[in-house]
Amino acid sequence: YTVVLATHNKGKVREFREMLRPLGWDVFPLSAFPGYVPPPETGATFCENALIKARDAAERLGLPALADDSGLEVEALEGRPGVFSARFAGPGATDEENNRLLLAELERSPAPPPWAARFVCCLAWVEPSGETHTFHGETRGWILAQPRGSGGFGYDPLFWSPELQQTFGEAPPEAKNRVSHRKRALEALVQALSRPEKG
Ligand code: ITT
Ligand code: NA
Image (cartoon, rainbow, N blue to C red; front, side, top):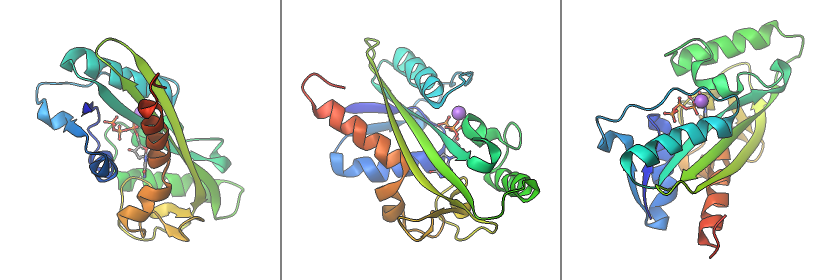
């Protein structure tokens, strides 16, 4: 496949490259299209936002497009930050600012640490013809009161994975890429595309 990866998030680009390398796909990052401005994410769900991003890229760039909308859902915060994960501390917030706000809100909540959470990913695949597919992946874990490790991106240093027995910030990339929400959604997509009638 030749596909546009419709994301400006460097962490996502890195992980998709790592995970797609063995598949031999030809993946174009959005940086290959310097004039392309992504649409505003106005959806209420991960899949709505992933579809907004993938549809726009497929239409305007004329290639199949893959978009990831993802985020962290924390039980003690009733599922927040959810679709607002990237801009939890405001538009253009840094990962560090988002992590600090998350811990501040959790410290104020009645629940003691660690706090149950999950990462969720919706992947949208859209062809220039308009044909559309979405795929879901999630991974469960615990938000720690202190960050550990500096790998990954976003909330990774705070997210302890029972499957890895370490945080996503401490885990080597190949370990995170075995159990992540992103990997699980990608597995579903690859399976569907490899079936003759597609997903
Ligand atoms: P694009 O829309 O350009 O893809 P974005 O960062 O704005 O980039 P999202 O709206 O999907 O993308 O927000 C995803 C946010 O959720 C991301 O910025 C992180 O804060 C968090 N997140 C998602 N996946 C993550 C992961 O694997 N590890 C840590 N944090 C993650
Ligand atoms: Na989003």
